[in-house]
Image (cartoon, rainbow, N blue to C red; front, side, top):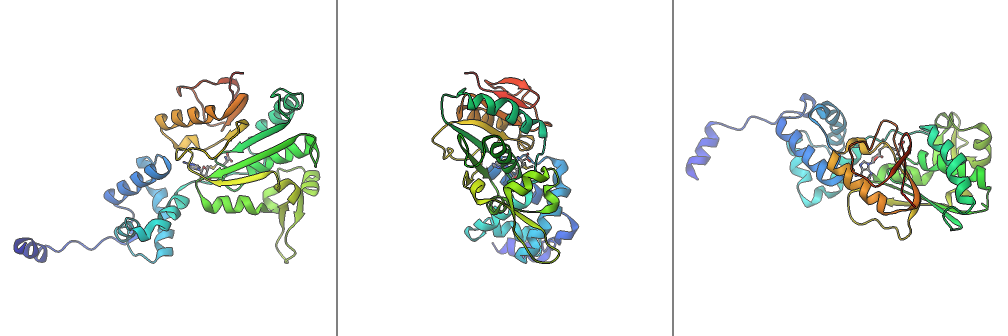
Length: 295
Ligand SMILES: C[S@@+](CC[C@H](N)C(=O)[O-])C[C@H]1O[C@@H](n2cnc3c(N)ncnc32)[C@H](O)[C@@H]1O
């Protein structure tokens, strides 16, 4: 003991680097492992700059001067909420209305007409936007539904939305978007399905109408976490632009879980930059980025 104290005194630990200098190998390794454990997002070595850019803001928000101090904090029970903010800060939430529009055309031209004609032998159509981010994907699908089925609809439909980030999920629940985000939505649909939500000068916000919002439910969930909270199978699952962040075993586990909760004949849509090639699965690839569970 005496020796170690003396030793420490003679060779004091170098002061921890301020965050602006970047993140050390050890600290990056810790953050990478934590993010993987909590979200299964696989941060490669080349994401270090991005992680640093995003976490500097968390250091500022918590008032902690170094990564060493930040990590020490998130290891304590008091750091529980901050661990959530960390995942929020790391995850990429980019999305937009009518993104990858072929999927919405396929919904309107193929999936919905078949559903209305009784393809699923049910008078209810259930969708899930599984990594919904701020909601644009789910509401784009809802606009297609409302346009095809009317409001009130001639067939019941629901849409569950989920994300690992509470922050983006809150935006999805609010369903309020700046006019600039609605550029890909046909103006007629904006008039029919949105209300002006702000009258402040210089602000132009639109909110999805309450009749449409009534079809939606929101869940904070990790796609690779606890059992899903759904009781009925889905006819359509959007799981787009999230698989790209996972490693192969995680992708296989996720596709297996999604397949189990799809109704026979139900569809899984993935991002156009993603592919299930090389990912073991029981689905039929019917179009690019469109998979179907056998009947
Ligand atoms: C790039 S956005 C995709 C949004 C939308 N699906 C689209 O394609 O436009 C990816 C979303 O996946 C969420 N995410 C990442 N890992 C997740 C996980 N393990 N479980 C649930 N959501 C996750 C992120 O929080 C983020 O909002």
